[in-house]
Amino acid sequence: MLLQEERELVVEYGKKLVQFGLTEGTFGNLSCYDPDEGLMCISPSGMDYFKTNPEDVVVLDLDGKRIEGAAKPSSEVDMHRIFYKNRPDVRAVVHTHSVFCTTIACMHKEIPPIHYNVAYCGDKVPCIPYVTFGTQDLAEAVYARMGDEYNACLLGNHGMIAVGSSMSFAFDVAEQIEFVAHLYYNTLVAGDSGVPLSQEDLNYVLGKFGSYRQR
Ligand SMILES: [Zn+2]
Image (tube, rainbow, N blue to C red; front, side, top):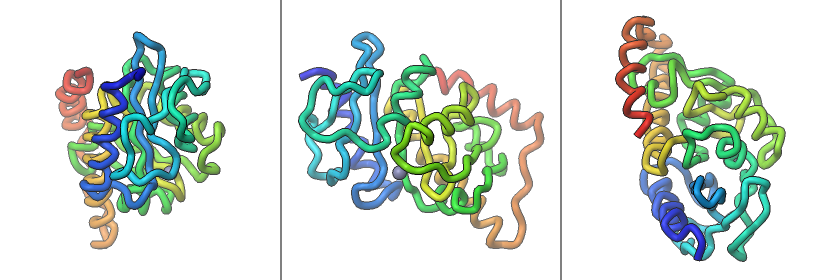
């Protein structure tokens, strides 16, 4: 079976998405990329994370052609593929409908740097307006907004995406940005919008995280 190790990661972290409250039901999807093989593997479309086995994970090339696996790949495959094609630092992509990120995304707001954990993403968390889910247009809009600069983005009226140099790091990004989104939501509810970190403090944290992000 191709990409055995990566398929097992997709299964393991799919369950974690639900266990950590980052998604519900069958929403969200995740993938890994093996640069040596030039192949990616992605969670199947609409399958219960607790009933998904490694053989259900679909292997594709970067043109989107199915190489192995009988299941239908996630409908957001283009949004994963575009990062593997364009960012050599990205080896895993996690897409969730986590509640606080999605709440902020429904307001089409970016998340300012009100907590230093924002550095898991960059100097803030950007947001794009709604683009139809499961389309190449959505993939292009997300990639255009994130470029090489950000590890996450809010998807207007939809959810969020996180990328990383490993599955564990992409998952950390999704989890930490949900935490920051929750804080930002709380500040908005409290009638304030929080005090952003100064540029100097932010630069220090981004420098510290720079080496961590490469792992
Ligand atoms: Zn989605």
